[in-house]
Image (cartoon, rainbow, N blue to C red; front, side, top):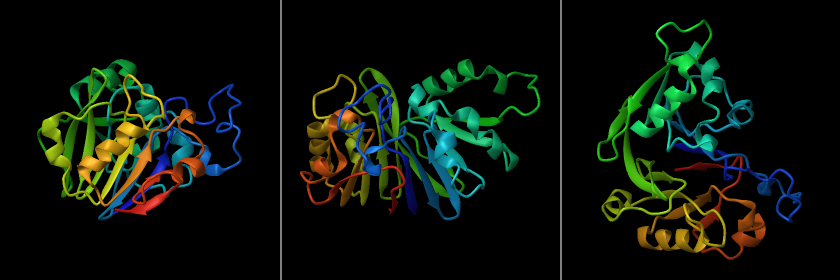
Length: 252
């Protein structure tokens, strides 16, 4: 199972438009972050988690082949803004999208041309699959365990595949969901910044979740420029916790 981080930034990306802080002006490529997304290759199948507005740029240098599933965490634009750019992949087959009801309804409202009874030629064609947080589902023979999470007051989804879990935009994890996250080899979780935030874990909160779950290794994602420079933050993290960066590829 190979996981490639296509983007590791928060909704504004880094550099943030108009900002001249030390992170946004850094020459270190690891400090430049597109909107958060990962591409998973497992058993010959490609699974994309989230498809934000930077998707076209992120996917251009990847092999052009079928994407077997798109797993969406929630409806916010920085996680779904690139859905229309999936249309070239419809040459292989209609694209299967998995999400909760809130997100599926939002897609239908934002992209009515893809779901109308009489679609004009060339629009992307999707198969929508409703995900319930307490019911596993399969992409081919790959078992996927949804994780119910809260992004402030918005119910969102994380996903576990084998001993890998991807959680982004989390503020709280309901107590009964922790059992789904036991025995992880690899955890990916958001850490927006140093200061507290209404709807995202900050670094201190993310490290506490990591302490409780005790995965073998963790990669932080969905970071803003307020978290700090990549190299400086990495130097203060526990030995098994790493800042992800755009283009990072790991085995999980």
